[in-house]
Image 1: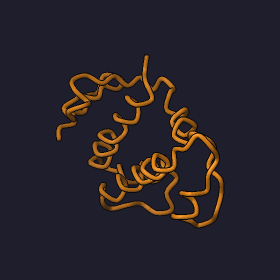
Image 2: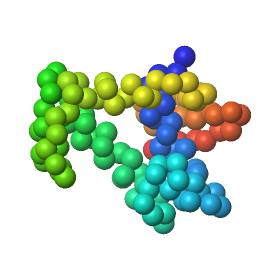
Image 3: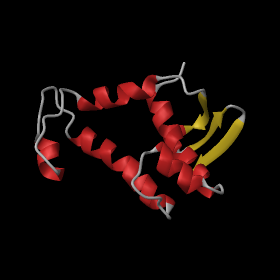
Image 4: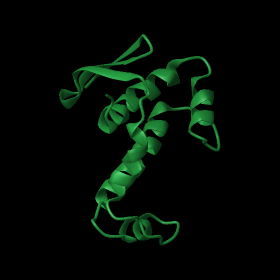
Length: 120
């Protein structure tokens, strides 16, 4: 059974691998609904990781505008436990299997018979 954490951990090495393919940045642009195609995978990685950092920082048991006030562009309340709400969408079965040690960032991501390795 997939976990939300496994799906999130798998997404970053998969994005890196997709960016190496011919047409990879165009695929990421369409899939992630970006306004323009990036030219650097680090830009994509930062864009993907930043909201998780922000939501985790504002992960309170009550509604709060702490993060939206700080990062803008408006002041909107996040729901109680926003990390739980945001990560609930990652609980779907994307046919992702992790093997190795994600804790030490030495793992493989297997999706539909394709393998991508991630090593720190």
